[in-house]
Image (cartoon, rainbow, N blue to C red; front, side, top):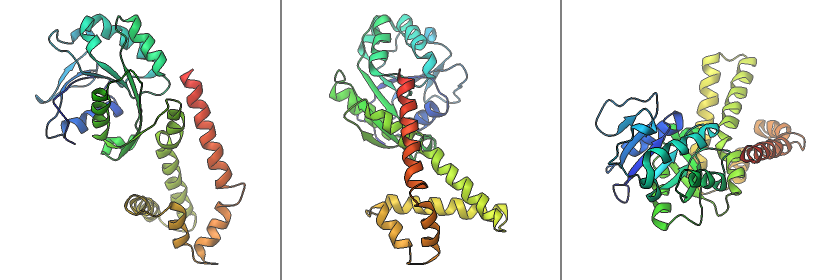
Length: 275
């Protein structure tokens, strides 16, 4: 990733997701000017600065983008602390939230109470972002400028692909499909491994076969333009072993029904968290 300029980024929260974003930005040939607000993170070089609290942000630092990567329950407190520390400097920034459960309206209201109504952008990255293989659903509110939207897109692109959605409501489905999606794949790997062991394979062999298969299938999906259904059909010989397994998995009350129910449940829960 090469950023379009050398922006000033304030990263609030540097856990797994915030840390993955930070690593991606630092890998850029032209990394942004970054200050991290986190009680636990430490810096061993001069590529970015760490402060323990918002009150420790240098008075000379004016962020272009504030990236909020804290737990949703602490979002309002974090924004309030930023308002007290940054004062009028906060008005020059846009807010990029990578949290679930906090809408643009709620975040905008929180910034207003802090003295600055900021343009809000929201993203839902997933955990493969930690290895640069994530995918993020991305929404920019109408108040965000084209420059702010482009910069946030590039910041997310540092850790994987980015899919922009036209409606904030679409982020509910994004959360259910790709945000939670890695867990579904990990469950499949877990179940394949256990089934292999049940049929006499050693744990090591079953694990290598399960993970290697998922990795290879994922590569094919990424590298080839074919529909997933066509790739599945290409593996399935009539009356063969794959067909026998798919007859079970594709029964009306099996995967077709349960995957749909699972996504419905996750979408409903995301809506509940958004309040």
